[in-house]
Image (cartoon, rainbow, N blue to C red; front, side):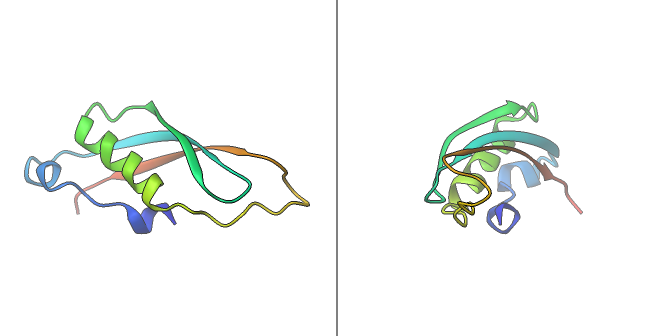
Length: 84
């Protein structure tokens, strides 16, 4: 879901910047995203910002199944920006 919302920033593309960003975020019982945070930076603010935006734009996520998980779910994902 997040990959679908990932957009490679034009400035990063022009400057041929690549990197990986790890984001921690919380999915509420309704599937909404909150508390997004970069936990491992790409060392390029433009990529870190794009990764945060991709997570936020992917919201809402499917609601976590109640019989498996109740309450909020904290996840960490790595988002990779590579030029091909």
